[in-house]
Amino acid sequence: MTAIKNKSNEIKITRIYDAPVKMVWDAWVDSEQAAKWWGPRGFTITTHSKDFKAGGHWNYTMHGPDGVDYVNKTQYLEVETYSKMVYDHGGNDEQKPLFRVTVLFKDLKGKTQLDMTMALPTPEAADDTRKFIKKANGNSTWDRLAEYLEEGTTKRDVFVINRSFEVSLWKMFEVWTDPKQLSQWVPPTGFTMKYIKADIREGGSSFYSMTDGQHTMYGRAEYLKIEKPNLIVYRQQFCDENEKISHHPMSATWPLSMKTTVLFFEEGPDQTRVALTWEIEGDATAEEKMTFHMAKPGMAQGWGGSFDKLETYVAGF
Image (cartoon, rainbow, N blue to C red; front, side, top):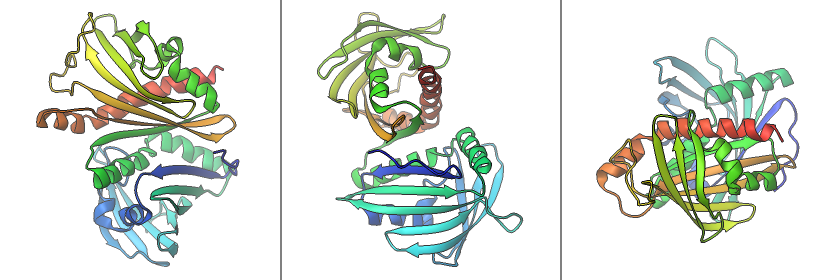
């Protein structure tokens, strides 16, 4: 899917959720549900009042992980049930709204396509807002919504992260399937990576090491499904230097086996969105499940660091 080029004073976001339109809509409208996902990772909200109709307001406070509170007063301008909402965002009784948001909900045979447009007064304001959203990890809001909907539909606890990159779809797929390129950006910040063997194809596997100069970790991946250039699914496990599966070297309660699903969406001729889902594969103890769930902020930091390196890497093409 090739996106229409955005106006310079607009910020556009598209997501596809594996949930029916009514469920996605209700997750926005019901303040109790919104409290479980609204805002960047680490934020919580308190709703004081919500009158969801044209001319109505949503009064709430966002609580940052650093203890700072952000008072918000959203005004709804248009509401078309299960289809469209338009609202002014970022204002309160002390300041005017920062931008106008239009959200469209489209049924895709049981899934939901969400198209969001944030319109700002000027191109400069849009550019500043893009930088602020990135710094505040604002787009993780829509990842949290995906996690919330997944739990509601399948009872699966998943971690989701999306990032858009200025690179073509086919080039991005190559970057994820070429071990020489993977090793340039995928290891955690401060680590280097070496493939001991690599057979990145459906049914193939890889074995690698990562080190920060003091500690060395080993891991393996088995490639379960590859659909060029849109999908990679692989099983990932920690192991020892002899490729024997083991627990995380720094967390005895980390699950033994993880499944990673990576989807690639073409957002323009030279823009690709990577949508990654991480989840426990196979049996896991209650303690391992809790370890995974509680580690999501760390996962966001870890994958976010890798994606930062990926962003720098593809900028050199």
